[in-house]
Length: 182
Image 1 (tube, one colour):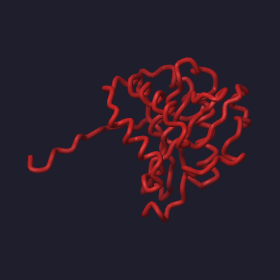
Image 2 (image 1 turned 135 degrees about the vertical axis):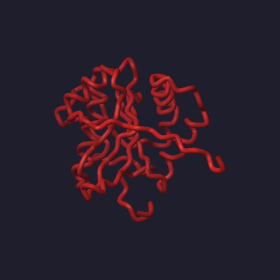
Image 3 (image 1 turned 120 degrees about the horizontal axis):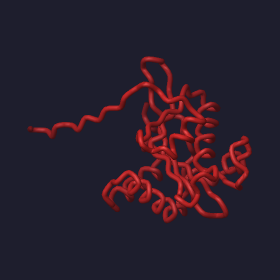
Image 4 (image 1 turned 180 degrees about the vertical axis):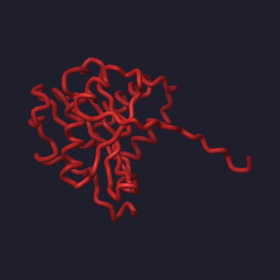
């Protein structure tokens, strides 16, 4: 579906309303965490967290990737959107999401590409609050599933994930395309 015809997952670039900018009151955390759409003035905090995410997964530092992903998050024509978790005025977590079609089920789901919390904020409810917000948004938009992958050895994240979702038996594969003319 063309970007201008799909229902937005998030309202990027708009001022968050009380409905989307709320302390986490769904029983997930009592730490004063607010989950909201990423905003233009979040760049510095978001970039620090995104660099931390890339470092955690042993990706080479690359400011071009940081700039490109930020541009995607700010462009309503691009299907990736972002959320941030804020505590005491500081960004403590990020999530990048997009819709995906599920032909075998005939439904649409929400895919969580990246979730990262600041090391100092881990275990304090930011990751749980971000996932709870994804669950809430997917449910209110009639989506069939929230799906994500993680590294098998990411024990800290898996403790959280195992407490809020069901691990699947599916194995993920990546195929690097052969360049044209090869």
